[in-house]
Length: 132
Image (cartoon, rainbow, N blue to C red):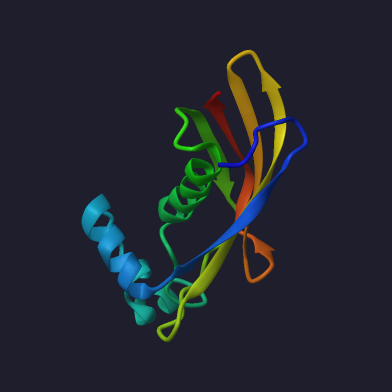
């Protein structure tokens, strides 16, 4: 667990997303949109290839928050989806989640996150608020 003091930098975590993860996430979430599993469909609708579910990407950010905070109660987790995470058939895509403790007030800790894939931000304005 990372000490949650204002200004503390949170050790970046990396997660490799493989197509098999997308299949498992689709089964768990019920989101069987073929852009997350079928290359031809993804390309036909203008995507560069199969893309990860946005909510799966957000869940990986939440996983990093849980690691940093020792599974503290999450009061808010928000972001916008700014760029798709393209998951190649071979290997996978690496999502990197870093962050900083923005504030500590009363029983709340606000974390400002940075979520990237191949150096490009994939979540806009991601933040988490947890109970300290």
